[in-house]
Amino acid sequence: MYQSIYEYARSRDISKEKNRCQRKIACYILLDENGVYERTEIIPKKNRSSSRCPDVGKYYTAGMASPVCDKKQTIFGDIKHDSFIELMKQGEMECNAFQAVNSFLDNIAKDDDLRCRVLNEIESIKDTEFISFRIDNINLEENSSWEEWFDHLMEEKQSTSADSFFGVSMLSGKNTELIAGKRTFPMCKGASAFGTGVSLFSTSHKKESGAACAFKSYGSGTEACPMSIEEAETIQAGIEKLMSSEHNHSDDFSILYWFDEDVPDTIGPLLSRSVSQKKKDEAKEKEYKELLESIISGKEKNLKKDGKDLKYHIIKYNVPDKGRFSLSREKSGTYNELAISIKRWLEDTALESKNNSTMRLNNIWSLMFGLMEKKDPQDKMKEIKNEYGDSRDKLIDSVFMQKQIPYKVLQLALRQIGRSMVYNYYNTDDETIKARYSPWTALMVLKAYLIREGEKMQKKLDTENTNIGYLCGRWLATMDKLQSDSQGDSNSKTMGQKMYKGCTKQPARVLNLCSENKGVYLGKLDPGYRKRFEDTFGEIADKMPQGFPDRFTVTEEAAFHMGYAQQRQDFFRKKENKIEAADNNNAEADEGGNENDR
Image (cartoon, rainbow, N blue to C red; front, side, top):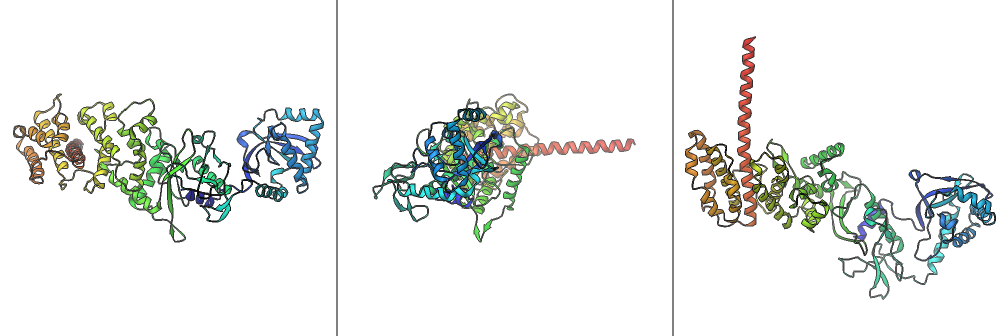
């Protein structure tokens, strides 16, 4: 896992340069070539860009300031001030610009009026903000004459360190100086999840060598992970880049992800909460839909670089309240494999809606919100964590790696369908109930589960399906429709609502019971309409000569829900088509009458 992030950082050229760092300079002290003070220039926060500066690090240089550019409290205060003065003196033989700075520093040490004047001008600068110098209109950090001297100084510090320990790096495979002894690893910062900073690895263990070195965090036992300071900082830079970007990470699912090159992001939209919420960015929503359509149509082709498939990477991360940053559950594959997996997910969850359009589970957050048992929690994020646990991670595998639906998610889907029947979803006009207890998200989950169990499931009613659970669901839906049509409008509970839960527990007993009055209900219908029901019952019965089962397996129960819903949907669709045809005939008749009047 460290290796893949290390390669990511190197390929993007975002690895940390040895002995250098990026600093946002808040103020420049302007001097002439002789060090005579001219004025200060304070940079507004919104205009501060990162500047490349010397970095002494912290592994061999405890208590040492950085030359060229450092904090206000170092240049004008007591913290590491002597170290700063000493370094600037050391470097003036190599960098003439240092002489101007040293002359200025000598002057403010002797001239209290000048010191007060400068400090008053930079009063708005915080003690921890960085200050640099500009000599003859050239920023000191941009003057390259100090670089060779500074690198040589750092090599001397490293070579004389008592903690130096050499060995083979896990990342490069080369013999190099490893982080060992009492040194700490770099802290990840720059993202909300990191707070004030979190350590990457531990150096508190020892291996066969007897020397402390880097060890993988958590979940990886005591597997050694030796690396150099520069390699650790490269990993730090890669993680911070991924965690601070608009894409490449999901705090909700605690994952990092990226592609070998800049390609359409097929991962982020499926994880984003913004896509699943009511207030949406219309431009992003359109772009997202177009991307999904290209995946479904197969236009999102396999991408190659130098004859090799471009790859995607997904890694789970953990930032505990106390402890160190850890990585686990790494997944990778080709971009083409990812597109195929997403396409299958979208096809497996597809269902036909009432208006003949296709519904799909385009977003994992929509799925989880749709199946939540506690509908109005104060903290939805906390409730989702409580209800789903590690099933959130397993859902990632279901979408991106074609794995089966997690058992916990399957159970939540089954219970959501039960609630939709209790609250009479299919027959109510209450929009609140329809919004809270809709079974469609659950049904899309069940369809994907059944397909991944090897069952054949279609977007709409499949009269060729022979799954015993599916047939039982169709039978109950047909009996429900028959009772409703034979009795007319009624405020009482429907047969489906009364018998539904019992059918999932004891299908044979309950379905035989509710079928006892089938003949009575059929006798109340016109002969032509009655025959439609008789044909449907006959077609279903022919496919289950052994009759109704005593019990359902989990797969059969899931199929039962699908059969019931799709048979009901088919009845509804035929009714709507009949009404639409009648409206069209009436409209044509009206047009003809108006024509005759003219």
